[in-house]
Amino acid sequence: MAPDPRATWPEEAGLTDVLGRPLRDLRISVTDRCNFRCSYCMPKEVFDKDYQYLPQTALLNFEEITRLARQFVAQGVRKIRLTGGEPLLRKNIEVLVAQLSTLRTPDGLPLDLTLTTNGSLLAKKARALKDAGLQRLTVSLDGLDDAVFRSMNDVDFPVEDVLRGIDAAQAAGLGPIKVNMVVKRGTNEQQILPMARHFKGTGIVLRFIEYMDVGATNGWCMDEVMPSADVVRLLQTEWPLVALEHASAGETAQRWGYADATGRHDTEAGEVGVISSVTQAFCGDCNRARLSTEGQLYLCLFASQGYDLRSLLRSGNDDAPLAAAIRQIWHQRSEQYSALRSALPADAASAVRRVEMSYIGG
Ligand code: SAM
Ligand code: SF4
Ligand code: SF4
Image (cartoon, rainbow, N blue to C red):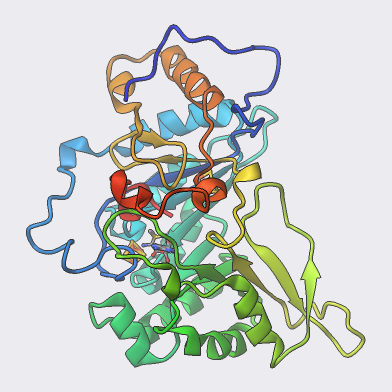
């Protein structure tokens, strides 16, 4: 969809959308390719050898990404997350990290710059990413048991290599490191406690994500969702937990601290988080925009249509139309899919072909 350059918005207030939500968080997908085939994201049957990925010419180059990111920062973005597909597959990704790390907010502050990865190439890349200016990162890991992990990534990738990647990231000084585990009932719920035991007391924050109905290919059904409340109950069979404050507005995870004998948060033991994308919508303060690998702007993870910023970007060197387009698009944003999900008819998901998570990133 092309932005309408004639639209207007009130100049006086900070940029907010129809529901009063500011623009703070930009997720940039740097590739639509991945070396894993997690069934909840890029099932093998769909993402097979005949699958048509984006051609190289369609991809934004690093200068284009940085130019666009600068405009987003001027409009309120304070956090940038690189994602994909698998972002570490993008050649010389550390060059992009170095470019983005030079951006400053209007107050002169550096951005919160991070990246989400499956960890497969992290052992090789951690040091270069840190040297380029990356501060922290999130690693996706769905289990510790090698057989479970190999079957979930569906390319027989060993868990040991991801654990080595996490060690390398810690050794390089990247932090805080978060580990995200998607919980699929009947597939990896038996990995919840071993994962918690493994990361407790390491300074790494483990977060459990409800399996979501993103995209149109993963064959999602509610029976396979393990509600976060059940995850917390399971953790409490082994450790007492105390609820912690949200770290920041728009934060998606509910945080739980391991408690000491007096019932207070034991900071040495650390914390876990749950992301209840399905059972407890957090659209009310969703401040996230997503930029696809080819420069389409998406306003919601569940959107079926994006706004083409690449054409504007490639139509000239003037940044004013880009800034105007970003303001206009965000100002008209009303998306809140998860909050409305339960009110949607059961067949609504199949009625619209939603964009794939591997295309716009998590
Ligand atoms: N390849 C990288 C990775 O896996 O970390 C980055 C891209 S991946 C699309 C980003 C995040 O989305 C991952 O943490 C992944 O587990 C999560 N994800 C993908 N499909 C999901 C689904 N159906 N439900 C919940 N989370 C999902
Ligand atoms: Fe690849 Fe990440 Fe999707 Fe798994 S979740 S298939 S690692 S993009
Ligand atoms: Fe944000 Fe859309 Fe997720 Fe709601 S469903 S939290 S609007 S991305």
